[in-house]
Length: 398
Image 1 (cartoon, rainbow, N blue to C red):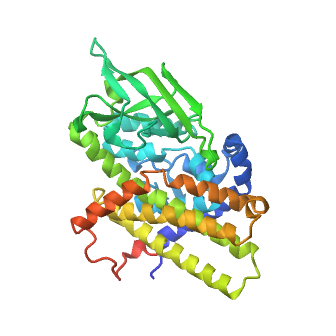
Image 2: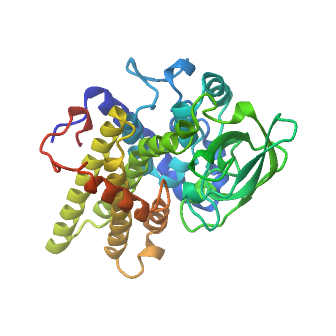
Image 3: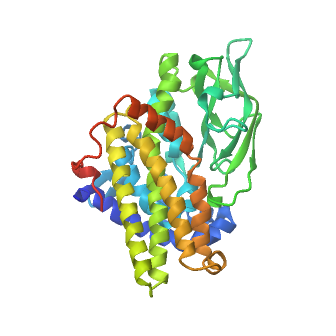
């Protein structure tokens, strides 16, 4: 299969080196999420803080051998995030920067909102949050209960509701809160919110995996929001609501799939490095696992190319996210079995990989959400002609 082009290989090579520098801190971060605050000078952390900022707002992008990278394209994010997640998924999710909120702001924010949001990120290392998931309703946008109520004097809105399992909730200073202003699909909206706002509170949520992400629960008690904080205020209700959100999720799902591929590769590499004497059947199993990882990597990169070409075309993104999250869970469990019954005690890093893998299921829609998307795409013929022997050169595998 053709390789990535020279530019993306350059990005992959540097990201791989930065990830290797983060790996020694993986278990420490798992015990204490504040470890990332001591690593602000590490290249991966420094660069991540200024990535995913569009060129129009970023005077200091990542420059490698004369090539400029903003990570605003899905394929660039996929290459970068796979390597950093290979170092440690928890660290990947603990990095400061635009993250998922930045993709939404780029998609539906107006010029003033984008200047304000990205300007905050350039000022200093800044963590952001993406508050969609709610207690009892998950990521079902149609079932949102968080509500914005118009103030009597017409000066803005009052935001009230609860969110749960929000990454970086306790260390973020700004983010996006999904809510509704009215019943029905045209009442969906998203607002830029600062964590210092009156009525905003965040509490930690204990987790078994991705502890570095410091998941939290948000309580919004009449948080004031002015009209300028409503993302997509210049767009129609359809485009700033479900239409815009769906395109954002399509752009993000290959990134989550790439994180899963990176984690699966890390578990596979752990077996190769620490189980040097393999029986013939174990060598065969290792070869099959490596082949599966490569196949999903290829699918993920192809999905990224697809959404970069058309952000409304998300069927491959859903297929990649669905397959990659299952891959990460299967490979990490296989890796544990390779070390016998005491593996979780004897191989603490591998135990962490397996715990982290479980969290991927709930990022950017669960497996059932992706299955529904894939089924709908199959029904309308979106997968006609797959699998294809032709792969776009920039979407090729390693």
